[in-house]
Length: 152
Image 1 (spheres, rainbow, N blue to C red):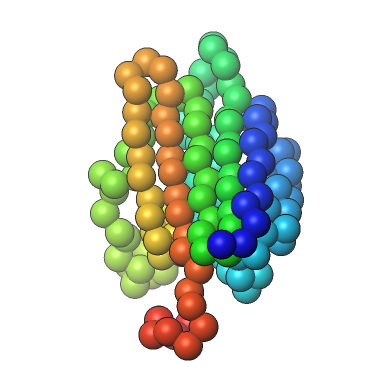
Image 2: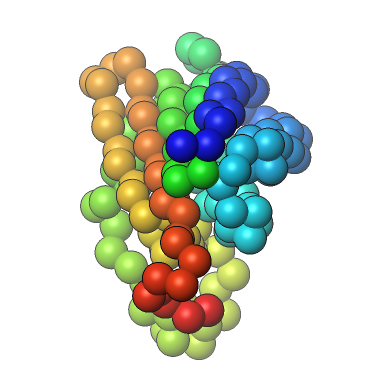
């Protein structure tokens, strides 16, 4: 097993901190032995998840802690991120995948974040402790070289 890289960060609920989120994800993947070719896709998935929290979990709510906590870990076989917030609950598993043809035909430019997260990450788990916090855990497993996998 390769070295394990572990980072924990807490950021304000402010989209100006998305660059910091992306930087930390790339740092964790880059310092670990996880395949570097997965870095951009994983970064996109984490960015989408945090953006959704910023745009929806705290909407117009200035009470309580408006922070997002992230725990990131990677080695040579997996990348895992746990994202916690105290905003309103939202279970991404309750959302069906969009009809992409209809989405494009209608000219929508938003609303594909959860769809992308599901396509990129191998596991997406959501948990909500009533009145306490949301927790989203996402895992990506390294593909072994030469093993069957999806093209593209």
